[in-house]
Length: 137
Image (tube, rainbow, N blue to C red; front, side, top):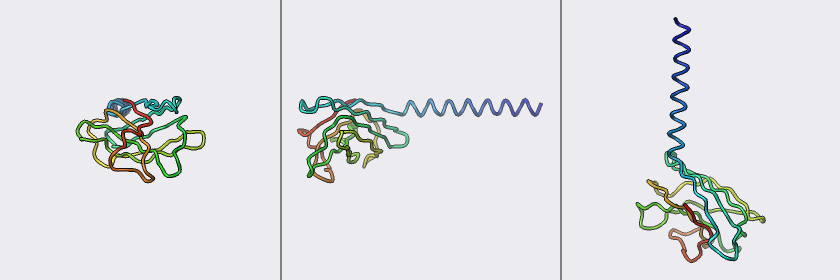
């Protein structure tokens, strides 16, 4: 009897772990960001946002490095805010590839879209929308 109870407890623990993982996946937002500039048409990025943890990761390929006095900056578009929310600086290597873990500087309720802009070195508080290089949902 004790062995049967232990086995049932193990099964219940596994079921709970599976449900927790499913719930965590439901809170994730995956977005593909496509090139917005004709001069860099092969640039692409994938962003994964975990709303529960309020953090994410973005991986970019084929994005030309910015000029020396500029940085690429990631933004989260949340309809609860009047303007995009800064989410950090994105660095790329000479091949145009990069990966960065990020958080927003404000709590995110709904991560509808993501964008990358070219900004002054160190980033900006408001995006320069005319300098958008990647965007997607």
